[in-house]
Image (cartoon, rainbow, N blue to C red; front, side, top):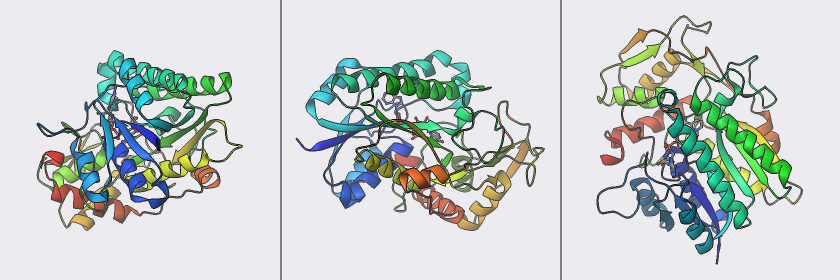
Length: 354
Ligand SMILES: NC(=O)c1ccc[n+]([C@@H]2O[C@H](COP(=O)([O-])OP(=O)(O)OC[C@H]3O[C@@H](n4cnc5c(N)ncnc54)[C@H](O)[C@@H]3O)[C@@H](O)[C@H]2O)c1
Protein backbone atom coordinates (compact mmCIF):
# COMPACT_ATOMS: atom_id res chain seq x y z
CA UNK A 1 0.00 0.00 0.00
CA UNK A 2 1.23 3.53 -0.80
CA UNK A 3 1.87 5.77 2.20
CA UNK A 4 -1.06 8.03 2.99
CA UNK A 5 -1.72 11.28 4.80
CA UNK A 6 -4.95 11.36 6.80
CA UNK A 7 -6.55 14.81 6.72
CA UNK A 8 -9.37 15.28 9.23
CA UNK A 9 -11.72 18.12 8.35
CA UNK A 10 -10.21 18.10 4.87
CA UNK A 11 -13.43 19.27 3.22
CA UNK A 12 -13.34 22.53 5.21
CA UNK A 13 -11.70 25.84 4.39
CA UNK A 14 -8.07 25.38 5.49
CA UNK A 15 -8.23 21.59 5.04
CA UNK A 16 -9.30 21.76 1.38
CA UNK A 17 -6.56 24.26 0.51
CA UNK A 18 -4.01 22.03 2.21
CA UNK A 19 -5.27 18.97 0.32
CA UNK A 20 -5.00 20.98 -2.91
CA UNK A 21 -1.43 22.03 -2.08
CA UNK A 22 -0.42 18.47 -1.18
CA UNK A 23 -1.80 17.17 -4.49
CA UNK A 24 -0.47 20.04 -6.61
CA UNK A 25 3.12 19.46 -5.57
CA UNK A 26 4.81 16.64 -7.36
CA UNK A 27 7.20 16.05 -4.42
CA UNK A 28 4.17 14.74 -2.48
CA UNK A 29 3.09 12.39 -5.26
CA UNK A 30 4.13 9.36 -3.21
CA UNK A 31 1.28 10.06 -0.77
CA UNK A 32 -2.36 9.09 -1.08
CA UNK A 33 -4.72 11.58 0.49
CA UNK A 34 -7.41 10.27 2.83
CA UNK A 35 -9.99 12.77 4.09
CA UNK A 36 -12.36 12.22 6.99
CA UNK A 37 -15.04 14.88 7.45
CA UNK A 38 -18.55 14.65 8.93
CA UNK A 39 -19.71 17.57 6.75
CA UNK A 40 -21.00 19.68 9.65
CA UNK A 41 -19.36 22.66 7.95
CA UNK A 42 -18.77 21.48 4.39
CA UNK A 43 -21.12 21.14 1.44
CA UNK A 44 -21.99 18.05 -0.59
CA UNK A 45 -24.58 18.19 -3.40
CA UNK A 46 -27.50 15.75 -3.23
CA UNK A 47 -26.62 12.36 -4.64
CA UNK A 48 -22.86 13.04 -4.69
CA UNK A 49 -20.37 10.86 -2.81
CA UNK A 50 -17.77 13.56 -2.24
CA UNK A 51 -18.10 17.07 -0.87
CA UNK A 52 -17.96 19.87 -3.44
CA UNK A 53 -14.48 21.24 -2.54
CA UNK A 54 -12.93 17.77 -2.89
CA UNK A 55 -14.75 17.17 -6.19
CA UNK A 56 -13.33 20.42 -7.54
CA UNK A 57 -9.82 19.57 -6.32
CA UNK A 58 -10.02 16.22 -8.07
CA UNK A 59 -11.11 17.98 -11.28
CA UNK A 60 -8.26 20.49 -11.05
CA UNK A 61 -5.49 18.04 -10.17
CA UNK A 62 -6.73 14.89 -11.93
CA UNK A 63 -5.93 13.01 -8.72
CA UNK A 64 -8.11 10.85 -6.49
CA UNK A 65 -8.96 11.67 -2.87
CA UNK A 66 -10.24 8.91 -0.58
CA UNK A 67 -13.18 10.37 1.31
CA UNK A 68 -14.95 9.12 4.45
CA UNK A 69 -18.08 10.81 5.78
CA UNK A 70 -17.20 9.93 9.37
CA UNK A 71 -17.12 11.80 12.67
CA UNK A 72 -13.73 11.78 14.40
CA UNK A 73 -15.52 10.59 17.55
CA UNK A 74 -16.51 7.40 15.73
CA UNK A 75 -13.93 4.92 17.03
CA UNK A 76 -14.99 2.05 14.77
CA UNK A 77 -15.08 4.33 11.75
CA UNK A 78 -11.52 5.50 12.45
CA UNK A 79 -10.38 1.89 12.95
CA UNK A 80 -11.76 1.04 9.50
CA UNK A 81 -9.83 3.94 7.94
CA UNK A 82 -6.53 3.16 9.70
CA UNK A 83 -6.78 -0.52 8.78
CA UNK A 84 -7.59 0.20 5.11
CA UNK A 85 -4.77 2.69 4.41
CA UNK A 86 -1.08 2.91 5.14
CA UNK A 87 -1.37 6.14 7.12
CA UNK A 88 1.99 7.73 7.82
CA UNK A 89 0.89 11.00 9.35
CA UNK A 90 -2.22 12.95 10.27
CA UNK A 91 -3.14 16.58 9.70
CA UNK A 92 -5.92 17.31 12.16
CA UNK A 93 -8.22 20.18 11.11
CA UNK A 94 -11.60 18.78 12.17
CA UNK A 95 -13.14 21.00 14.83
CA UNK A 96 -15.99 23.37 15.50
CA UNK A 97 -14.63 26.89 15.24
CA UNK A 98 -17.24 29.60 15.86
CA UNK A 99 -16.07 31.50 18.93
CA UNK A 100 -19.48 33.04 19.76
CA UNK A 101 -21.36 29.78 19.24
CA UNK A 102 -18.92 28.00 21.55
CA UNK A 103 -20.03 30.27 24.41
CA UNK A 104 -23.63 29.16 23.80
CA UNK A 105 -22.78 25.48 23.30
CA UNK A 106 -19.70 24.62 25.36
CA UNK A 107 -20.49 20.91 25.61
CA UNK A 108 -20.79 20.53 21.83
CA UNK A 109 -17.43 22.27 21.43
CA UNK A 110 -15.63 20.25 24.09
CA UNK A 111 -17.18 17.03 22.68
CA UNK A 112 -16.10 17.68 19.10
CA UNK A 113 -12.79 19.42 19.71
CA UNK A 114 -11.45 17.59 22.77
CA UNK A 115 -13.20 14.18 22.89
CA UNK A 116 -12.90 13.95 19.10
CA UNK A 117 -9.20 14.76 19.25
CA UNK A 118 -8.60 12.15 21.99
CA UNK A 119 -10.49 9.49 19.99
CA UNK A 120 -8.32 10.30 16.98
CA UNK A 121 -5.12 10.08 19.07
CA UNK A 122 -6.21 6.68 20.45
CA UNK A 123 -6.69 5.38 16.92
CA UNK A 124 -3.29 6.80 15.90
CA UNK A 125 -1.57 5.10 18.83
CA UNK A 126 -3.39 1.81 18.17
CA UNK A 127 -2.14 1.79 14.57
CA UNK A 128 1.35 3.05 15.40
CA UNK A 129 0.94 6.48 13.74
CA UNK A 130 2.79 9.09 15.79
CA UNK A 131 3.25 11.98 13.37
CA UNK A 132 0.74 14.77 13.73
CA UNK A 133 0.21 18.32 12.48
CA UNK A 134 -2.45 20.04 14.58
CA UNK A 135 -4.55 23.14 13.71
CA UNK A 136 -4.12 25.44 16.65
CA UNK A 137 -4.86 29.11 16.90
CA UNK A 138 -3.41 32.37 18.16
CA UNK A 139 -6.44 32.44 20.51
CA UNK A 140 -4.41 30.20 22.87
CA UNK A 141 -2.37 33.33 23.79
CA UNK A 142 -5.42 35.21 25.15
CA UNK A 143 -4.85 38.94 25.66
CA UNK A 144 -1.28 39.65 24.44
CA UNK A 145 1.16 40.70 27.18
CA UNK A 146 3.46 41.97 24.44
CA UNK A 147 3.55 42.16 20.66
CA UNK A 148 4.55 40.56 18.41
CA UNK A 149 3.40 37.27 19.92
CA UNK A 150 6.10 34.65 20.00
CA UNK A 151 5.67 31.01 20.95
CA UNK A 152 7.17 31.60 24.42
CA UNK A 153 4.25 33.90 25.30
CA UNK A 154 2.13 32.23 28.02
CA UNK A 155 -0.92 30.34 26.77
CA UNK A 156 -4.24 29.53 28.41
CA UNK A 157 -4.47 32.72 30.50
CA UNK A 158 -7.73 34.65 30.49
CA UNK A 159 -9.24 32.70 27.63
CA UNK A 160 -12.85 33.77 27.23
CA UNK A 161 -14.39 31.18 24.92
CA UNK A 162 -14.77 27.39 25.07
CA UNK A 163 -13.41 27.36 21.50
CA UNK A 164 -10.15 29.02 22.54
CA UNK A 165 -9.94 26.81 25.64
CA UNK A 166 -10.48 23.69 23.53
CA UNK A 167 -7.44 24.59 21.41
CA UNK A 168 -5.38 25.26 24.54
CA UNK A 169 -6.50 22.02 26.24
CA UNK A 170 -5.66 20.02 23.11
CA UNK A 171 -2.16 21.52 23.11
CA UNK A 172 -1.75 20.48 26.77
CA UNK A 173 -2.94 16.95 25.91
CA UNK A 174 -0.43 16.77 23.07
CA UNK A 175 2.39 17.91 25.36
CA UNK A 176 1.44 15.14 27.82
CA UNK A 177 1.37 12.58 25.00
CA UNK A 178 4.88 13.60 23.96
CA UNK A 179 6.09 13.34 27.57
CA UNK A 180 4.56 9.87 27.83
CA UNK A 181 6.15 8.43 24.70
CA UNK A 182 9.08 9.80 22.67
CA UNK A 183 7.68 8.27 19.50
CA UNK A 184 5.21 11.16 19.13
CA UNK A 185 6.20 13.95 16.72
CA UNK A 186 3.69 16.79 16.97
CA UNK A 187 3.68 20.20 15.33
CA UNK A 188 0.94 22.48 16.56
CA UNK A 189 0.50 25.28 14.04
CA UNK A 190 -0.92 28.39 15.68
CA UNK A 191 -2.73 30.14 12.85
CA UNK A 192 -3.31 33.86 12.95
CA UNK A 193 -6.16 34.93 10.63
CA UNK A 194 -6.48 32.82 7.47
CA UNK A 195 -8.07 34.62 4.51
CA UNK A 196 -8.01 34.39 0.73
CA UNK A 197 -8.65 31.50 -1.60
CA UNK A 198 -6.90 29.28 -4.10
CA UNK A 199 -5.81 31.30 -7.13
CA UNK A 200 -8.11 29.28 -9.40
CA UNK A 201 -11.14 30.86 -7.68
CA UNK A 202 -12.72 27.39 -7.48
CA UNK A 203 -12.25 26.74 -3.76
CA UNK A 204 -12.48 29.23 -0.91
CA UNK A 205 -14.10 30.04 2.41
CA UNK A 206 -17.83 29.29 2.47
CA UNK A 207 -19.21 30.03 5.93
CA UNK A 208 -22.77 28.94 6.64
CA UNK A 209 -24.97 31.70 8.06
CA UNK A 210 -23.61 35.09 9.03
CA UNK A 211 -19.79 35.06 8.69
CA UNK A 212 -17.87 35.23 11.99
CA UNK A 213 -14.72 36.49 10.35
CA UNK A 214 -14.01 39.81 8.70
CA UNK A 215 -12.92 38.81 5.19
CA UNK A 216 -15.91 36.63 4.24
CA UNK A 217 -18.15 39.33 5.73
CA UNK A 218 -16.54 41.99 3.52
CA UNK A 219 -16.67 39.80 0.41
CA UNK A 220 -20.33 38.90 0.96
CA UNK A 221 -21.12 42.62 1.21
CA UNK A 222 -19.15 43.22 -2.00
CA UNK A 223 -21.07 40.52 -3.86
CA UNK A 224 -24.43 41.82 -2.57
CA UNK A 225 -25.30 38.94 -0.25
CA UNK A 226 -25.13 41.22 2.81
CA UNK A 227 -26.12 44.88 3.00
CA UNK A 228 -23.32 46.32 5.10
CA UNK A 229 -20.35 45.34 7.20
CA UNK A 230 -20.50 45.72 10.97
CA UNK A 231 -17.27 47.09 12.44
CA UNK A 232 -17.06 46.15 16.10
CA UNK A 233 -15.53 49.14 17.89
CA UNK A 234 -13.46 52.10 16.68
CA UNK A 235 -12.02 53.15 20.03
CA UNK A 236 -9.18 50.64 20.37
CA UNK A 237 -5.63 51.98 20.85
CA UNK A 238 -4.69 51.17 17.25
CA UNK A 239 -3.79 53.12 14.11
CA UNK A 240 -7.41 54.10 13.36
CA UNK A 241 -9.27 52.76 16.43
CA UNK A 242 -10.39 49.51 14.79
CA UNK A 243 -9.05 46.05 15.67
CA UNK A 244 -5.73 44.98 14.17
CA UNK A 245 -5.07 41.37 13.12
CA UNK A 246 -2.36 39.42 11.34
CA UNK A 247 -4.07 38.13 8.17
CA UNK A 248 -2.42 35.28 6.33
CA UNK A 249 -3.20 33.93 2.87
CA UNK A 250 -4.68 30.43 3.14
CA UNK A 251 -2.28 29.22 0.43
CA UNK A 252 0.70 30.32 2.53
CA UNK A 253 -0.90 28.54 5.48
CA UNK A 254 -1.39 25.38 3.42
CA UNK A 255 2.27 25.48 2.41
CA UNK A 256 3.20 25.71 6.10
CA UNK A 257 1.54 22.31 6.63
CA UNK A 258 3.50 20.78 3.76
CA UNK A 259 6.74 22.11 5.31
CA UNK A 260 5.72 20.69 8.69
CA UNK A 261 5.26 17.22 7.20
CA UNK A 262 8.72 17.42 5.66
CA UNK A 263 10.18 17.93 9.13
CA UNK A 264 8.96 14.46 10.14
CA UNK A 265 11.56 13.01 7.79
CA UNK A 266 14.36 14.35 10.01
CA UNK A 267 15.46 11.53 12.26
CA UNK A 268 16.33 13.77 15.20
CA UNK A 269 12.88 15.40 15.25
CA UNK A 270 10.50 14.43 18.09
CA UNK A 271 8.24 15.87 20.79
CA UNK A 272 5.80 18.77 20.80
CA UNK A 273 6.52 21.99 18.89
CA UNK A 274 4.18 24.96 18.68
CA UNK A 275 4.79 27.25 15.70
CA UNK A 276 3.07 30.52 14.73
CA UNK A 277 1.85 30.88 11.16
CA UNK A 278 1.19 34.50 10.28
CA UNK A 279 2.83 37.25 8.26
CA UNK A 280 4.11 39.26 11.22
CA UNK A 281 2.19 42.36 10.06
CA UNK A 282 -1.12 43.58 11.44
CA UNK A 283 -3.83 45.40 9.49
CA UNK A 284 -6.82 47.23 10.92
CA UNK A 285 -10.41 46.60 9.86
CA UNK A 286 -10.49 49.93 7.98
CA UNK A 287 -7.25 49.06 6.17
CA UNK A 288 -8.77 45.71 5.16
CA UNK A 289 -11.90 47.43 3.83
CA UNK A 290 -9.84 49.83 1.79
CA UNK A 291 -7.59 47.05 0.37
CA UNK A 292 -10.67 45.03 -0.57
CA UNK A 293 -12.33 48.02 -2.24
CA UNK A 294 -9.17 48.48 -4.32
CA UNK A 295 -9.04 44.79 -5.32
CA UNK A 296 -12.73 44.48 -6.14
CA UNK A 297 -13.60 47.94 -7.40
CA UNK A 298 -16.65 47.75 -5.09
CA UNK A 299 -17.62 50.16 -2.34
CA UNK A 300 -18.02 48.38 1.01
CA UNK A 301 -20.68 50.14 3.12
CA UNK A 302 -20.00 49.69 6.83
CA UNK A 303 -21.42 50.71 10.19
CA UNK A 304 -19.45 51.14 13.41
CA UNK A 305 -21.11 49.28 16.29
CA UNK A 306 -20.10 48.49 19.89
CA UNK A 307 -17.04 46.37 20.64
CA UNK A 308 -17.64 42.60 20.79
CA UNK A 309 -17.11 40.95 24.17
CA UNK A 310 -13.79 39.11 24.28
CA UNK A 311 -12.23 40.93 21.29
CA UNK A 312 -8.72 42.31 21.75
CA UNK A 313 -7.24 45.48 20.28
CA UNK A 314 -4.42 43.97 18.26
CA UNK A 315 -2.45 40.85 17.64
CA UNK A 316 0.26 39.84 15.22
CA UNK A 317 2.82 37.12 15.16
CA UNK A 318 6.53 36.78 15.59
CA UNK A 319 7.10 34.38 12.71
CA UNK A 320 10.82 33.79 13.14
CA UNK A 321 10.42 30.25 14.55
CA UNK A 322 8.42 29.15 11.49
CA UNK A 323 11.31 30.33 9.36
CA UNK A 324 14.00 28.68 11.50
CA UNK A 325 12.21 25.37 12.10
CA UNK A 326 10.12 24.87 8.97
CA UNK A 327 12.03 27.01 6.47
CA UNK A 328 8.68 28.70 5.81
CA UNK A 329 7.67 32.32 5.32
CA UNK A 330 4.42 33.82 4.06
CA UNK A 331 5.01 35.26 0.61
CA UNK A 332 1.57 36.58 -0.38
CA UNK A 333 0.59 40.22 0.20
CA UNK A 334 -2.60 41.83 1.44
CA UNK A 335 -3.44 42.67 -2.19
CA UNK A 336 -3.07 38.97 -3.09
CA UNK A 337 -5.38 38.03 -0.21
CA UNK A 338 -8.05 40.50 -1.34
CA UNK A 339 -7.71 39.67 -5.06
CA UNK A 340 -8.05 35.91 -4.48
CA UNK A 341 -10.94 36.27 -2.03
CA UNK A 342 -12.76 38.42 -4.55
CA UNK A 343 -12.06 36.03 -7.47
CA UNK A 344 -13.58 33.18 -5.42
CA UNK A 345 -16.57 35.17 -4.16
CA UNK A 346 -17.38 36.71 -7.54
CA UNK A 347 -17.29 33.32 -9.29
CA UNK A 348 -19.20 31.66 -6.43
CA UNK A 349 -21.59 34.27 -5.00
CA UNK A 350 -23.44 31.60 -2.99
CA UNK A 351 -20.28 29.67 -2.13
CA UNK A 352 -20.13 26.00 -3.13
CA UNK A 353 -23.90 26.00 -3.73
CA UNK A 354 -23.38 28.43 -6.63
N1 LIG B 1 -10.25 29.62 9.85
C1 LIG B 1 -9.74 30.22 10.91
O1 LIG B 1 -9.88 31.43 11.08
C2 LIG B 1 -8.92 29.43 11.91
C3 LIG B 1 -8.03 30.11 12.75
C4 LIG B 1 -7.29 29.37 13.68
C5 LIG B 1 -7.45 27.99 13.75
N2 LIG B 1 -8.33 27.37 12.94
C6 LIG B 1 -8.49 25.92 13.06
O2 LIG B 1 -8.23 25.33 11.81
C7 LIG B 1 -9.04 24.17 11.63
C8 LIG B 1 -9.74 24.27 10.30
O3 LIG B 1 -10.49 25.48 10.28
P1 LIG B 1 -11.37 25.87 9.02
O4 LIG B 1 -11.44 27.34 8.99
O5 LIG B 1 -10.92 25.13 7.84
O6 LIG B 1 -12.79 25.33 9.52
P2 LIG B 1 -13.91 24.58 8.69
O7 LIG B 1 -15.12 24.55 9.54
O8 LIG B 1 -14.03 25.16 7.32
O9 LIG B 1 -13.30 23.11 8.56
C9 LIG B 1 -13.42 22.15 9.58
C10 LIG B 1 -13.95 20.88 8.94
O10 LIG B 1 -14.04 19.88 9.95
C11 LIG B 1 -15.26 19.19 9.81
N3 LIG B 1 -15.63 18.69 11.14
C12 LIG B 1 -16.01 19.40 12.22
N4 LIG B 1 -16.24 18.58 13.27
C13 LIG B 1 -15.96 17.32 12.84
C14 LIG B 1 -16.01 16.04 13.45
N5 LIG B 1 -16.38 15.89 14.72
N6 LIG B 1 -15.67 14.96 12.72
C15 LIG B 1 -15.29 15.09 11.42
N7 LIG B 1 -15.24 16.28 10.79
C16 LIG B 1 -15.57 17.38 11.48
C17 LIG B 1 -16.24 20.20 9.24
O11 LIG B 1 -17.31 19.60 8.53
C18 LIG B 1 -15.35 21.04 8.34
O12 LIG B 1 -15.36 20.58 7.01
C19 LIG B 1 -9.96 24.11 12.83
O13 LIG B 1 -9.41 23.22 13.76
C20 LIG B 1 -9.92 25.52 13.37
O14 LIG B 1 -10.17 25.55 14.76
C21 LIG B 1 -9.06 28.05 11.99
